[in-house]
Length: 508
Ligand code: B12
Ligand code: SF4
Image (cartoon, rainbow, N blue to C red):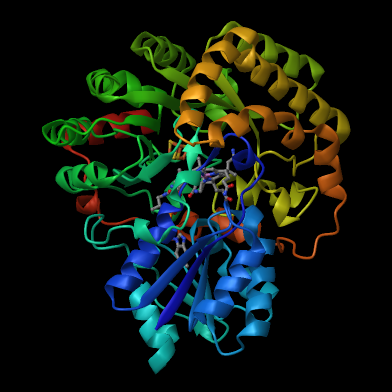
């Protein structure tokens, strides 16, 4: 069977700072190809809709699937599915990925027949079976499949993270992926899931609070095969498990792999596994993202981050001492007034780190969704990108955006000040010499994308598809309804005893 795998267009943030290869979709493609199907991938982060329709004509797929990791991409996916259905009425059209797994029925309803199925959960676990079931009948028996005719059994976890490799070779423009000065940059997965349970996050509800690790030798082989000098480690929390981090380090050292890495982790993990991070600094760790989320104890508690303010600051100190570039995230609350924005701005200017500001956004699948859903001021999917305010703001909305964008501008200028530009220009020149323009272009894009007037205008666009109301009370009453993959039995977690004790202690 011929399968075309499609990743939708970039969202606001990725239009400026980074653009990464769609690793999840590559895994789905890898699983389908491994089962004998002829597979193509198109990534609309780097290609236009015209290219998609041309490929559709040329390739003539029997099946088309879309990656729905991001809620804000839902309208685009539905419109593309409708346009595909018009052109290829008998094609099997399905969607999978993080966000759509939480709202599968709503997706089918919006699409009015243009989408045959939503495959919930880890796609590589069931895609091969799904394609056979569509050909031979029996879609409703496939684990994770949701169709207009009924639901299959609950989604199944992939048997291991090692068996199926991402079909990287199917991506047509590999040099288009970058993050900051890591240009070009590939992505890799060392571990999957998260054992913590922050209220604003859906990573733990998607993976049933599980945490699984990949075989160090297999990922080291994969790293050795990557041509890109930069590597983005996609794990939600890197190096939770110290021995695993060390084992990968050993394996890549044995192979003589030399790359520059980007990773994301938690303050408490960083403090606990200092040796691992030092080792990775020596191996090429260049950027680290710490999700601090708040700079006051009250909000940290509200987010159930389970990290004290003291630990957050101690982690920042330690990260600085490593000599890597550190970025942190702070979540802007809709209740912020001018004074609060000014305080945050002042604090951010005092510290050397890159600061990213996102806006509190309740997503289906998070614990705050049932609590806050009724308060939403908009249900337009496109605005659920953590850069728009979808809850009532204390300041008039236009003023909130003016403050938000000016804070982001101040922070952007801080890093692109003349001194910084001096450094950035040297990096830029080196990238240009290698024919890589992503990083250089990103330096000038900020003002055209982050713009308060544009953000307001986004709210005024007519919305064809809107998040439907759900029964928030029912979801809130039973936590199990939040999960896509139900939590596995305790023994299925791979945390060693010491890490388990650490996670349990931080969970309180
Ligand atoms: C790495 C990452 C990124 C990277 C890479 C994104 C990319 N190109 O893929 C970067 C940094 C660019 C990024 C950016 C953003 N991200 Co992000 N990201 C993640 C993260 C941490 C891991 C994703 C990942 O690569 N996992 C590993 C791969 C193997 O898994 P996967 O992609 O999920 O794919 C699996 C399944 O989802 C499924 N699947 C995926 N596609 C398909 C397709 C089909 C057909 C099928 C059947 C199955 C399927 O099968 C795959 C294999 O098991 C997730 C959290 C998480 N754990 O999911 C957040 C997450 C997905 N991101 C999130 C957000 C909010 C964003 C941003 C909007 C943030 C911002 N500041 O603007 C941007 C928007 C990006 C864009 N598209 O423009 C939210 C999504 C919220 C939502 N409900 O919409 C998440 C869940 C984080 C969170 N805690 O809330 N992100
Ligand atoms: S630690 Fe990170 S990935 Fe885990 S639940 Fe909290 S925000 Fe989500």
